[in-house]
Image (cartoon, rainbow, N blue to C red; front, top):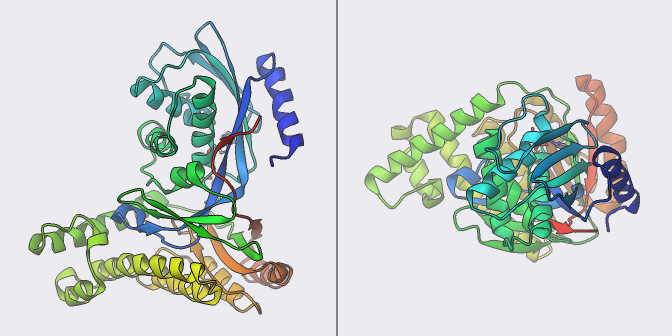
Length: 389
Ligand code: ADP
Ligand code: MG
């Protein structure tokens, strides 16, 4: 399944930087979220799909308690003693993802000794396809096998999330690590972010999932993201005053949001309307996928985009343009922004036979109208983390 040439490059790089051959290699994929945006931190529903781009992690035990980490793509070796408190590496930022994993494994008392590790990946970093979760989960998968830790799929997801939140310092939800750990070829995953219950959603092989990166340089994403979280918390607090069982916007209906518009004010009520309506769209999309009604899935994706644009206000003109151009291509079912917004990528669904027309029509028009070079990734639904060699 993994291109043998990539494995060979990794084994060579491992031997070159760290000496000897690895004991084993694990992988974990990047992801694209088909629908369910800005719902994860309101205990809602999301529908990500693991993609055919991944991070490979090669490991070998050492008996001297040393840990040595090497990135084939970024270069450098980051080393420390496994018995010491895990510190941040100030000069090799990539090393803080595997370091964070080792830190959280130690907090749960996992019996890990010294080891060498080398990693390489083809998930584009920072494009919104979640290369960071792929690094974390692939590292956990490799160490779980190397030290026979016996971790369950969702332990791996939780530990990866904790590494990113507690060590790297990004307040991410559970979606990215959950799909990296639990994805399944030929399927998207409907994830209930409250219970972590997952449902496999079949994605037929004739359907192309096409991600297009706006190439917009993002600014202030963190502070705007925090604003949205605070607005969702403000509306949750309002509803919880009269109904204490409301723990998140997940527990609120659209009717309640409409009725509370005056009390919430125009901005907060629009934010709440996005989250509540988006949860409904995810549930409807799951049913439509099962019924093979891809036109309906496409309409729901467009409605999701409009809600993110008008109510949640996290799109930028370039995202809106890409969606408009995608929907104008004959045969495209629908498109929307995916990820946190303020730049990043769109995702469009279409029959495989329409992809060439999509690229031919969307790329030059987008380039001409924005001066930006879009990057197109045609994705297929792939398996979650596993040991591959
Ligand atoms: P995203 O997860 O959306 O791709 P992030 O900023 O969360 O973006 O994570 C990107 C970071 O993950 C990179 O800057 C790098 O530190 C790390 N990373 C991603 N891919 C690799 C890789 N192949 N090797 C080492 N580190 C990687
Ligand atoms: Mg990330």
